[in-house]
Amino acid sequence: MKWYFLFIAAFCALFIVASSNANAVDARKVQLYATDGYYTLADGKQVYIWGYSLENKPGTAVFPGPKIETEEGDIVEVTVTNIGPQKNGADFQVRPLRVKVLDDQSADDRILSVGQSDTRLITASQAGSYYYYSYDANQYGIQMGLNGPFVVKAKSSAKQAWTGGPNYDKEYVFHINEVDPEWHQTAEVGNLYDYGKFHPRYWTINGKSFPDLESDPSTMIHGKVGEKIMVRLINPGRDEHPMHLHGHHFQVIAENGVPLPIPVDKDTVNLDPGETKDILVTFDQSGHFPFHSHKIVDNTNNGVYPGGLHTMTHIEQAGNTGEATITLKVGETHAIVNGEHVMLDVAPFQLKGDTYVPFQFIADEFGGTLQTNAKDRNYIYKTENSEFQLWLIQKLGIMNGQQIQLQSPILQVKGKVMVPLSVISTYLCSTVDMDHSSDAITIQYQTGQECHTPDRDRTAPVVRAAPAGGTYSSTQNVTLTIQDDDPNAVIYYTLGGSAPTKSSARYTSPIPISQNTILKFIGIDTSGNASDVQTESYIIESASEVLVEVMNDRFSSAQIKVKKGTKVTWVLKSTMMHTVTSYEGIFDGVVTPNGNTRFSYTFNETGTFNYFCMVHPFMTGTVIVE
Image (cartoon, rainbow, N blue to C red; front, side):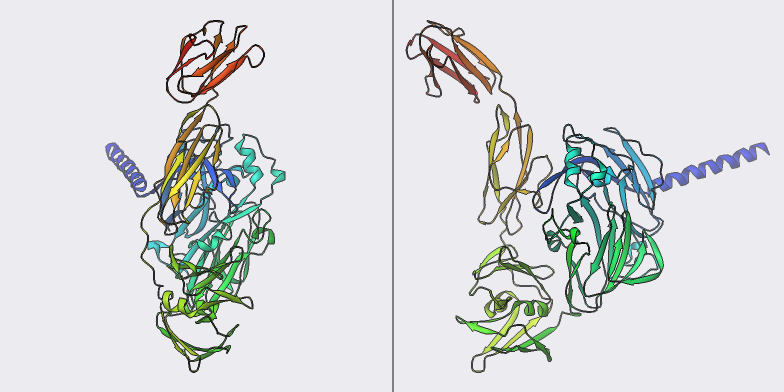
């Protein structure tokens, strides 16, 4: 009987171990590296950040952290490794990871030392929207960037808010952050920030602010009439944000990952600090509608309006894959679209052999969006996969990154932009007929069809730096150059060692480098071709100094050996005038009792340099630079 119970106990132990190992095997593994880096704000300014990276390399933190996505019922094994900051002197601290609601009750708030890892098993018990973060009582880590979205999908990745919950056609994740530049600057130099002075000046969704939000497919909502769009709103910060959608009501269906028993109809939903909310929008009309915070300050970039938490929704007519016909007439504000009467803001008119029609009207009917950049006087027409950029009164255009020449430019009349029929027929995939006897215009088009694209430029730019990386004794003004057939190709660069992107600083003038720096830069043309990332490392060392005495009849050291970057100074120890003159004409100095008694030259190139005194040619010397 005794052996029987021992056998049963052993069997149970083995079963428990086997089950535990099975769970470990089944867990989805995520590895995050905690480090620092620099983040470029909407106005081009950079701030120092802490954050997570998928790359085991100091200085590569991203803002916010990478999205972690799993399915309901999964176990996620998240390992955070502190690989330390790249910035010397920064106050960098990272703690074990927590996930809001799913796993945020842990009392473990120890600081991970450099090289130390911490692993957590997160059970995705309920589909919903969450966020992960490094916990500290004052939200230091969250403000500096140690946070990111944690999304739990329905089983089998079904397009449901949760398993058996409401269906949707598309989903968007809006992870909102506030940025207080002074807080980040204080951490960069290793000081402690006074939380009572918290004053954010930038607000971001998925790391971007207006106007960049409208050019990012992850934050520019796009759909069709009849579609249901789910937006996951995540706010790990310290302030509330009332998010408002124009043109539609929506349903709040979940809060903090918990489904609401009865959805709440809203057009503005308040997102409190540390809160997540899932909203479901059913598009019932086409058009372009703002989606933004109702707090004015949230819609600024360092006090400049518009900016911050402002993006757009673009809704097309349902079933826009069939043929459609527009009939217009020169001088009349009345049009017919597929048999339905429509009024125009401005009547079509003729000018210099071309006929102009309202561009916004064409964009709406063709299923595209028309965005305005008042500062540069340009307009961008977009469909889901195409982009057409035009400038007022200019015959230059850019179609999907390729420069094109127009027959006639776009114009502005009564505040409305007008597009010539030659552009519509050539580039917007339509057939245009003009009856000159009656001035009637017929436009036939395929809704949702992509625009004509010229032959694409596929040649990547070539970028170089001068001077090249190396060891120097003084500040170097580094010039970046780019070679490409596209005159609008641009160089982007970073100084912190992180990989440059189109969000990095844009090169416009020589870069002064006065300390040890890793410069990375990339060239990108308007066709999207990118050069390889180039890296140049600069070491700035104060030049050491070697003294040579100039005697009456000789130099005290006829031959000296120095390292590259060394400053050699000749000091007069004579009652006569002498020169220090290179045979090759590289340097030529005078030392005299009645004037300068010292002459210096810094040797930044390796080689052998012979010199003599022009007054006393028998006085010679040599400097060997290694």
